Image 1 (cartoon, rainbow, N blue to C red):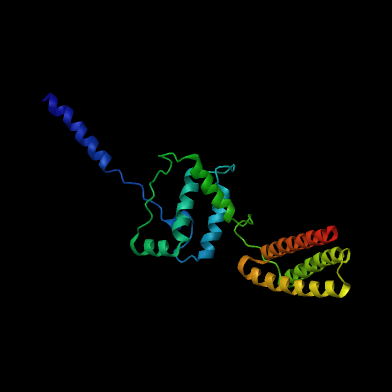
Image 2: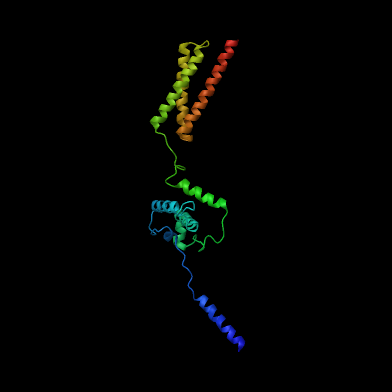
Length: 216
């Protein structure tokens, strides 16, 4: 009888634990407080709003919730992952307590960097384009300035005015054509830099040749 009395409470206790309902896991839409019909723009906007509020460095920060929001955004911002989740529920394997296993500091830095880098408050990842009119004006202005410098160097040596003007015209035309081509490949800003470097190299070579001619 003594053994029977001891075993009854254990059975009851096990049944009591088994009857406790498990906590339901939130869906990615519930984490971001959005309907399943939310557009990609809505998802991105809500993610940045919540990330700024929940970031661990903020007074209102919550690391566990911040990680969950990042995970939800990772699923819903990717069309293929979102489609897979909506069709099969796969891809949203997130433990209830995401802070059970601490992550290395490098992980948090990476998440923080991507959050701030992609947010509306950051200019990273947003290419800045120069207007075509501004680009052409800069290229022309630099060409003229460097041409004048080259012209003065040549006139200080043994060249003639007409010869220097012709060379400057040909060189400027080539610079403009090269700048347009490189702008399509590297962007306007990079094209201006490459054109200036190329023209300065050409001017230095011309100056050295002029100096050698004087010595001869």
